[in-house]
Structures are given as C-alpha cells and as structure tokens.
Amino acid sequence: MSTALTSLVYIPPGNWSLAVFPELKDGVSNAVQLDGVIHRTGSDGDQMLSFRNCQDFEFFSGNSKGALQGYGYEYLADGDYGPRMMRFQDMGNFSIHGITLIDSPSYYLTFDTVSNGEIYNIIMRGPTTNGATDAIDVWGDNVWVHDIEATNGDECVTVKNPSSNFLIESIYCNLSRGNAIGSLSTGTDIHDVTYRHIYANGADPSYVKSSGGNGTVKNVLWENVIVRDAVYPLAINSNWESTDESADGVFFTNFTYRDWHGYNSENARPIIRMECPSDTPCTDNTFDNVNLWSADSSYASEIC
Image (cartoon, rainbow, N blue to C red; front, side, top):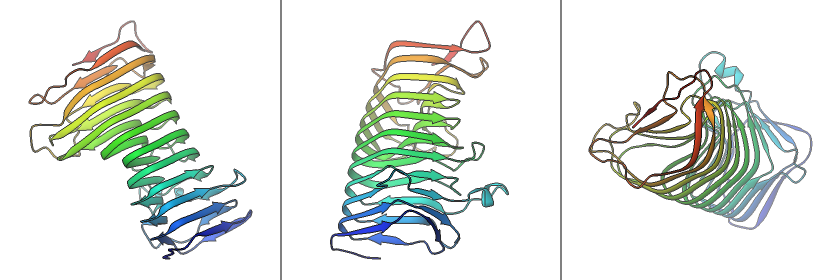
C-alpha cells in the first residue's frame, strides 16, 4: 500500500488474523496504532509487516497491549524458518515503541538504512535455542535504542554496516546470544556507537565479529555492563567463520570498556577475547574498571 498523505492506521483491541502480509511505502506523516493482538495465519511472504521509504512515521501501541504473535514454533520445531516479523527500510524521522513481539519464525525487527529514529519500550520473547532469530538488527545514522527486553535464540541488539551516531541503552538480553557489531566484511564504516546500561543474562554483552574485509570501526563505548553466565562476555573475533575472508581485515580503534561486572559460563573459554586482524592490529582500546571472572573456577583466561 502506497500512501503519501497524512494518515493513521488503527488496529483496535481484540484478536486479529494476518493472512496476507502488507507493505506500507512512500508515506509522509503516517502512523500505525496497534492496540490489539495480530496473529499470523498466512505464510506467503518474507516479512509479516514491512514499511519502506516513509518519512515522519510512528508505529506504537496506545494502550501498551499491542502485540504480534508469529507462531514461530510451527517452523522452528522442525528446524525451518518462516517470515520475519517486521522490517523498516529507508525510513527517516521515525519511532516504534510500546509493543510486544512473540515467537517470531525468524528475525524480529530489522531496520535497514534508517535515520533519526527512536526504538524503545519493546519486549521480544521466543525460543532460546534457535539461531537466525535476531531481536533487533539496525544500520543507519542517528538512532536511539532503549528500554528493550529480548528473550530469543540469537542476537539481542546488533549494529550492522554502515552505522554512525547510535545510542543503545537500558537493554536486557536474556538467554540470547547477546549484543554484536557485525558480522563485518569489505567497506566497513561504523563509528560513534554507545552501548550503556546493559544487563546480559546468559548472553554476550559485546561481541564484535569480522573475517577479512576492510574499513574501520571506531569510537565505540560499552559502559555500565552487568553480565551473568555469558559464553564470551567481551570479545573481538576477527576470525568469524561466516563472513568474507578477503582483504587485510577491519581496523578496530578507540574502543572503551568501562564499569563492567560479571562472569562467563566456563573457564575453558576466554573471558576477554581480543583477536584483532594480524595485518590490521587494534589500537587505542581502553579498559576502565572491568571486573570479570569465571563462575566455575579460581582463575579466568583471556586471549589477545
């Protein structure tokens, strides 16, 4: 559906079936108010709800009871994946807030090439054993993500390439794989990103991943982090297996880790893992009041 005029799509309280997956595009000053619960009944399409090339856009729940039920178990129980829940592409001056997303058949929220946005007060819950069920993947410029809770099987709030001027705060990652930057390949350009007030339970609060590639990630801060039972609590992994192995590697510089507390799940894995590209070493990285330990041992290990 294409709409260039100011409009409000209102979905009132109640239960509603989604048999056909709609797309709203090319809109200016539009909003969707979800006060009921949408249940996926269809299967034909890649995105359950998609929004493209919209300016001054808002998706919200007026009563804080708006929800989307994806019935992902119908796919995930058999090792398959279905449609993603919501995709926002080429959006400017937007916000999405106050909703609950349950049991996605694949990714929950994807923000592709967005600017001047706010993403907040969102709960996502689903199985914790299936990959490719990212909670939030976002790339663009000037985005504020805050007050998010994610219980899922893959990444929590992940910054993709290219990205700049992000503030990500008050995030609760529960039994997910945690927050990430990447995976990164050629042409990487990510800078001025802040993660703060992060609570990670059985999740990694900071995982930067690349393999080969080139470009730069710079000026990144992780601050006020509490982590419990993570696999890799603090990691740069330049040998990530699923990305491009060409070129000399992405340059990581001016990373700051400040006020960290917590432990990993087993001392067989390094609690701090700084595996930077050998041909493009990391520079100017700062550790300030980082207190990490292993839950099952009297010692903790690290790799650099």
